Image 1: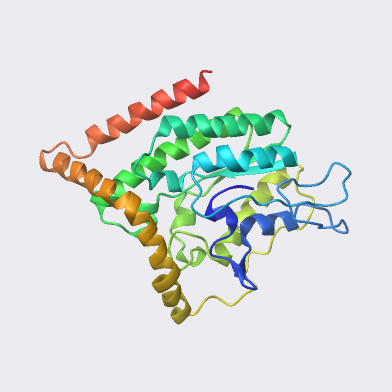
Image 2: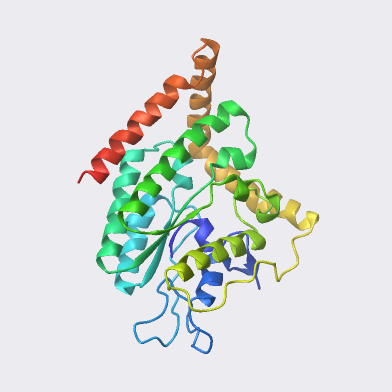
Length: 287
């Protein structure tokens, strides 16, 4: 599994470690009676003996980390299935560049596809909406995430990926699916992601085990535990992002407010983002 904290399993803690949707999905890939061996991004082994699992996802990973660090290790593993789910952290960075992100992800997907791996991809909700940020702060992030999702959709079509729509309101509006930080799924959410991918894989004849249970097996965190997390790890997350994102986000919010003040609303900024996206897709898909 290639990606960031979503695929690492943040939000689904079991026995002091992150588990997440990828591990839950791996358990449902092999047919009953086969060894579930070392859970994997690879699905059933060539010999059909079981499922090996390699999760390379790391919290905070950018598309550059996936392309430069995770992808070479994944290619050496020669997976039968490989998930590539990344991009939210790119939208939270000062140097967001949709054309560069598109080139990186296309290279990763092309290399894995050349090995014969079946790709798993997902479009994701924008963090501004999930965090409930005020419109001048939320709109720039939403604009960026829409561009990332458009690139993901295009690459998913190009490489015949198994694609899960995690930006749909059915996912984002159900707060039971999300952890205290409102950015990562909780256990119920990770189970829903795993079950969604399992259903799509089963339709292609690629999942032979039972689908992951949708109901949590662990008790949900108490309000005190959630508040403690937000006050410790959550605060650390905000501080790390603040050093990089907030100065740029303030500038973006200022641009939003100026356009709304002069009566043009966000239309010029939307048009600029659409033009950048169109150029990125044309350069990537036209190669």
